[in-house]
Length: 212
Image 1: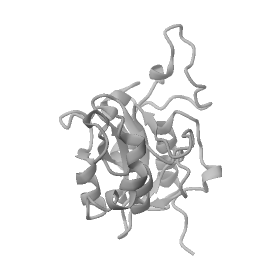
Image 2: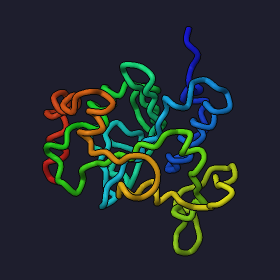
Image 3: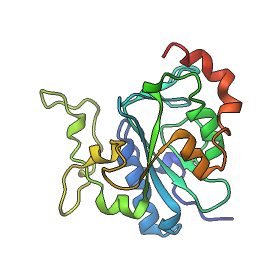
């Protein structure tokens, strides 16, 4: 039996609404336990210019309606023909194939208004672990209270930086680390066909997206 890349979902470090830190903890586990070469792993930031990205099959969703995130972060394992996605906020299997994730979670953009189209910043895991920092200030209200309870461990920072989360969320290709893709280009790069998600999901997604 092949060794698992990361623990079972229920054994992973997880804090609701802190997806970037949840993924950082997954990456740190792989680095420390050496369960796979880091060169095959990528952190995917999903967002856009309006910070409104619809994703289906999320734990906080209702029925077949999408959740509209300002951004979301997942881990991609790309060392085999069928890439695997690790999304601790998903109701799909953990991990699940990128093909299934594309069909069920990303779905087609043919019926989605342009301001909701998703972009994907793909960052190598070694670069993410080396550079990412968050003081969690984005999760505080104006009075200093928390929008959502933070993780119990100390904030993630580097020797030179306390906060650069927005650089990763920003989808300007000239900013930050990694490469920015459109949905079609992302699927073309990691699945081989931009149409792999649209054909299987167009009928189920259209009713939820035509009004956007």
